[in-house]
Length: 266
Image (cartoon, rainbow, N blue to C red; front, side, top):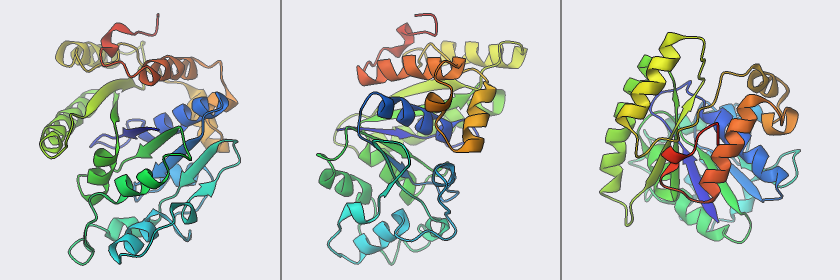
């Protein structure tokens, strides 16, 4: 089972879109996919038409039950979606209180890792949507994964957010038993603007060894897919953004670390 976390310490860079689109591509290929929503905002949960404000048996309940040392049955918290082979462990807004309760709850840092151990035979790929702030939830997302995907919008402020994320990774690396592979993915690229072109060039200069040389273009099909609650890879499989995500997926499945050699052109 492969476990990928999609994370950045800046919001609005395409995290949830990346999770959903990759999940859709994988499910179409016949893979068994689990999406885990660790973001208290619940965007991934809402995408699949579940309500983070009212949902029961969410990932919050999983953390709470784990802290109370109850015997966990992971499938109790997992929901099927309307798409074959694609399930979700949904978020609830109560996740926002988890860091404040951390002193009461014990052993929260490896909850997701422990749960995934019990699901090894159930899924081929797990995709974790991480919150943009450093805390218990992000630590869980980073501890559980064997590959980290860092979407970065091609604009100046997003590049500053990436710097914070790289510093966080440096701290996390010190606590892991094995190095954390990570891949930076340029998103929302608009070749018509100087800002996008300049930001992409900056990424290529600063992060060459960690950067996927392709990019995800601005594409209205992604917005439309979100509106109707269908992965863009299913709604519009030939759209330019989905074709780019498909190339990214090919590289990730091969577990390449030198993704700088892979571009949108080949």
